[in-house]
Length: 513
Ligand code: NAD
Image (cartoon, rainbow, N blue to C red):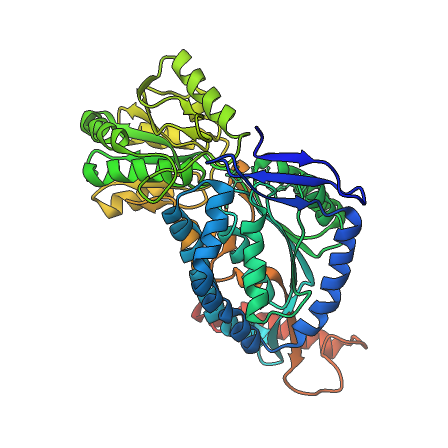
């Protein structure tokens, strides 16, 4: 039974999709798929609303948006119920992966907005400084399309939406068809907080609706999802010459050094491999442990994984696989690893009696011939490969077409930093993992197949603006020196200026840089 399945069309012939809970297989709702005409209508409405919204001072925008925290805190049980129902993740995971970060993102970006988005004076350098002044203006782009995946359906919708609207844009969110109402909560909460009608809207549907949004005449696409879809979106945006960010898949490596705190490393390995049923883009997917400490590390991992409880309700550690399409990928990777000599120490099979569960699994003796170490598995699996030393771990960590995040586990922070710098990946965490996106100060984005562009970071909000320099005269003169007519006198003046600025010791003193 599919988690998302076509239902009979509406009386007007519109496509409908039924949504089931992957944990119980019970129906949790349906969506009427928004057509190309709906997308066009939403964009037109957004365009009108955005003109007004852009005129609202940033501080006022931030005040309105911040109100969504109160609504979210008040409605957190309802929001969590939708998320748990649609995804099958545990209640606790809905708090730590969705609602807590949701509150934090709103709070953080509202706190930054006035400083980051207000007009700003900047000094010009060198010979220009005596003549000209520079002012930076952060112009909203217009209408931003935000397309999100099913694994973090609420927080991954809330974070970009809040940034885009604080910057004065209107947003159209197209959440994943697997968890549509979890994403829609972001829009509902912002609307309830007072964000004007049309400034935030949701369009429901699958790839067809997403593609219509991308091609519908928006001014930017913020996409989070798979590499395959990301490439299609990049091509469509390139064709229209509109900016985009792509936050794509990962195969994050965890390097366990000889001097790691093995209790913490084993706990971190299990948690960061299993969190959200393993459906975390920056979750741990590959573990390289130095041979000399591998016995103890693996023993600890085995004990921990053996004790994990999966299922539904409050007293479980791990929920279901979120989508039926992910389960065969997890199964294929495990079967391929087994066939190539990996040892399944714990788990290693699905349990589909009541819902879509995959048993918490620990695999060792894996290597890079196996899909489990090369492609995104996105399942509750700890995969451990022994390496001779840290050099081999770095080499193998970099042997991937992905490069989203990664982690180094050592008691020597300086060594950890040195290893981090050699990792060919978007971000690195020392003695923890799966958290780079959760620190909004940190620019987040992958290298290689893991994405294009970065989100978050101190310039995150400004990514939703056009940074418009306005250059102003310091003195009002009738003409500039380089304007016509060009005479021997103007030649001598410019030549003299070059000699003075760049031909003397002054430049070494940094006067003109
Ligand atoms: P997906 O690419 O299948 O779908 C993502 C979204 O794109 C959905 O809303 C989908 O309906 C829409 N879509 C599908 N085809 C489209 C098209 N042609 N044009 C426009 N939109 C289209 O990805 P998914 O399976 O929902 O998500 C899982 C993937 O997301 C994993 O690879 C995971 O690693 C990645 N992810 C990345 C990050 C990150 O920040 N880097 C975060 C979370 C998830």
